[in-house]
Length: 112
Length: 113
Image: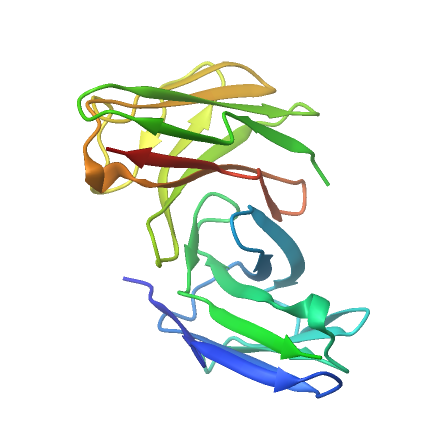
């Protein structure tokens, strides 16, 4: 059974810091990995999708890497801003778009 | 990316009643998904809904409790039946893009009293 773990569970940093969020999964048989952002009381916003054959994806200040063989992904946020404060979720796709298994999330607070 | 809307955005329901949640997508999609997010927890897939066929339910979820309709390629409903306080959660629908990226609606926050 696929299990996804995110570390740390919560993180508080001053504005401007670069930070790394970690995601690990127990079964390397995944099709892709997706990072989401969830604001309080809201739905999920897709940030980055990494296909299983890819090593990383970048969007603006965000960079996500994937090491499928070791079951790890990291989300790097450069020059953090208070607007980045949210819960960040990673999810692995175990049935080619048909089923995502989510981690519990990292609650990020960026202080101004 | 797809634009997804859900109704209602939130509701408070009494124990033993039912709530039907609507999900509307701005484009035709083959598959729609329903997830549950219990308080303080992450998302769990309830079922996958294809147009014209019965929904496929994940382990621990049954059709009698969570009946789903998928009448066309842009719309789906999830009903949560015989409500109990344990059903208090956020319910989200999602769709997949051609590149297998999933997009989510804003969610429906259900509180059962």
